[in-house]
Image (cartoon, rainbow, N blue to C red; front, side):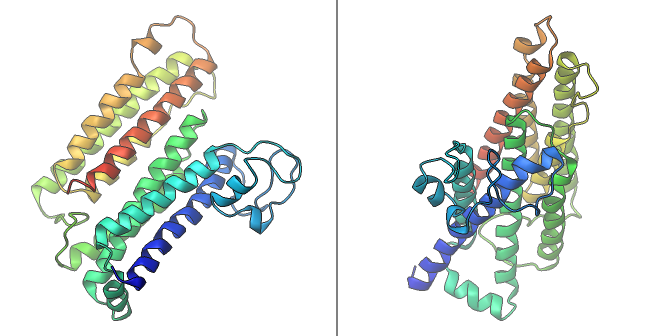
Length: 295
């Protein structure tokens, strides 16, 4: 890698951290039905707007020692953690897809070269997928229900990227978005992976219905269905089926006798089950990220 390659690679890590800062807003506000744009970033304790130099990803939290500058209220460690994980996801995905040849890639994008455009779409698509799983896992970890809206950008980017890459037949070292939709393995992988994800959601609903019989019960979750369906599109067959099987195993763990065996049905137990499901979704996302180092 030359100097320009290094600078652009660092830029990807920085962009990931910036996106992670916005994802913190999504994780906090979306389940509450609040606007993601207005008001601007502010302390949830005192309501004071956060200054721009106190809103730098990861760095500001370290400089402020995890406390609000105005009221001294503690700032959760989850904020810099989400930003750091987002930075690692975007930076590592970019490095693995492109191999660090960014000066050549930049010239290709400027000339509208198909291989360069495809590599950019692969980075955006896979990063969007992994970051969405991170957001869904974090919202579940907080014990909140996940709005279907959170999947819309990821689905849109995946369809767009897959459309372009299936039309432009170019060589790629990473088998992402490369399988023809006209083949039987593609549809078998997509249908079976989605079915396994749907089965995982069915298990989750049974747990929620047992522990939360109020009108606030999370009876209509689709996290696993969307996650496994998108994974089947992104990854070549039969990886989608394997990831779907992993999803149902993880959800089966969440739905184990440890929860079903209790006779006491309370909302707190339902929240705990959702929290552990968030942990299982995070593990599943980690498995997807790890696959990049194996292909």
